[in-house]
Image (cartoon, rainbow, N blue to C red; front, side, top):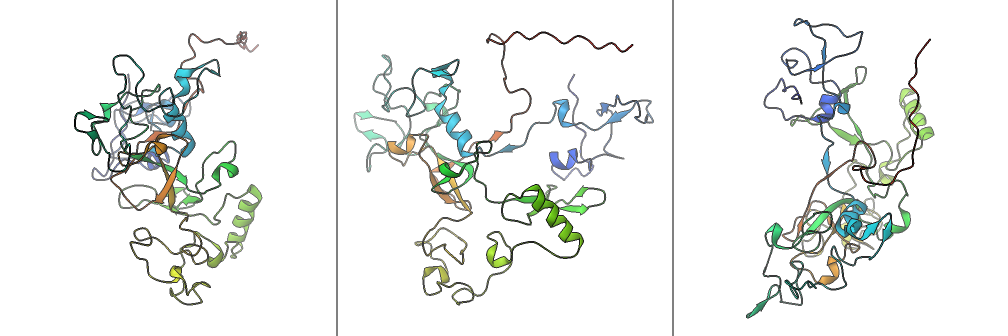
Length: 361
């Protein structure tokens, strides 16, 4: 029997998994009959004669947090090579989420039909009178085309999709093998009571995240040094001018103090036809040599307004994370928990002898 997660004391506050798992949603008015039975021998029995506890993640009731997929995850899901692979042997690679090198169906009953919603040529959004191709001038209903071998619809065409990755031209050369994700921003959870480990919440009941002391992944030695410096009353945080994530207010735009390239466009107020909406000005490079910054996020997949080139899952582009477009949407992913192999039944495994039961003397 699956038990419900206890309700919030403040009915108007949205549920936050992180706040709940941190033990901040329990006590009078919250604990109730749906609490989990506490099997610990040291658990205190309540007024109803039972020892109870809050749900923990290992109970399998709470789901992992939804998020955007990173670029590697998205490309893996789009290709759907599971249908072309047996025992890690790929019989046929893919250029698109479907088999073959073309964008038309090779099957007898649907031969010649376009397999995704995209623009064939300039001005050709859906074909011409007498023979429409993808039958959609803009976006089409989700199930208008066949899913890939993972059962996912529109992994090519219809709308592009956001990923978590911060765009860099040379990301493929800089990825770490165990972390194929370009994030650039590191944050810490703010504590409202450090002694008790109480997380600070915003007006929506969600944890508040602060900029990390360093704008890069720190080694353990650097973390300890930063903590010791904080205790001593000093700081090892880089100066604001050298920290791309600094929230310190920059000098007045257009002055030499704010930008050594102040005579260029990067020292002036933005214009919608020259930059993205409300983009920030990097005082060193942004606007002078590049439009890429830490808020430039990758999107992939191609849309109803893109040519077939962008339907290839390997292609990618970028846009400021605060921008929006009728050509860009998103889908959610979540972290995988549990065993690495979801369905081991029917697959070949090494025969491993079961360990003997331990019987203390």
